[in-house]
Amino acid sequence: MHELRKIRWIIDRAAVVDTIVAFANAIDAQDWQKLRSHLAKEIDIDYSEFRGETPRRVTAEEYIKQRVEGLAGLRTLHVSTNHEVTIKRDAAKCKSVYRIYRLDPDRESGQNRLDTGGNYFHSLIQTDRHWLITGIKQTVVIVSGNTQVHGALRDTSR
Image (tube, rainbow, N blue to C red; front, top):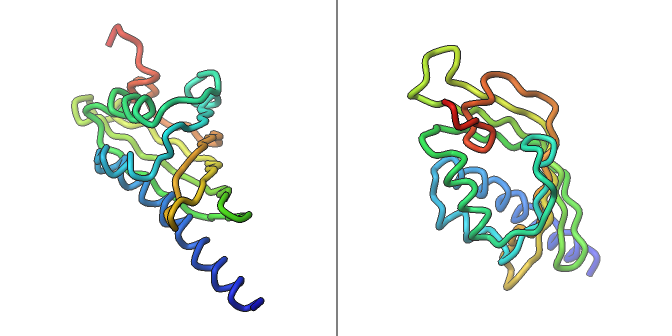
């Protein structure tokens, strides 16, 4: 029976990591329906280190609306690695390392990139063998480039 628990943990861990990676890929593809499929109805978000926003709970729809507005016109590439997963019954936590490259093709070269790197802390729940994200906290280690590229950081005097 102990071996079956180990196998179940390996399967669940892979599914958690797959959810985190699919979430990042959906943002890069701006596939908002796919992104929604990986989110719980409500999400606790903390982007205070990058955006200066107060941590709060939002609906999945509000979260997606923020991404649509903040990434409008941008090309992005999210890289997600070093996943540390803990699972307790139908809840999981995943700490990972990220690197996000953002390109605004409408800006001149040298002013058209914003790259960040740091850690993500995702919380997830399992429903019908499918993992959904219930919490996202981002910490920032690296910020390189023009912060005006990101819609959430852009001033209106562009």
